[in-house]
Length: 91
Image (cartoon, rainbow, N blue to C red):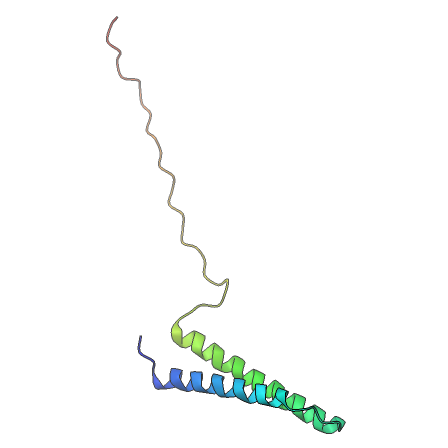
């Protein structure tokens, strides 16, 4: 299946948010509590963007949610037909 423009953008957005979140977490945390909360909010927003892009990729690839697919109906067991016993030759 060829990758369309929307799917390519979703992959690029997912990869960019991952790189940005890793870069945020690699920097020493600030001592100021307000700056810390802003940084935490920024990382949380990046995580939400990553999850949204991953969800779009799953939908575009046609994959169902885990556990949402039900197995098909079972085929009935074969029944052995039993009729009267065949006649036995005399002994």
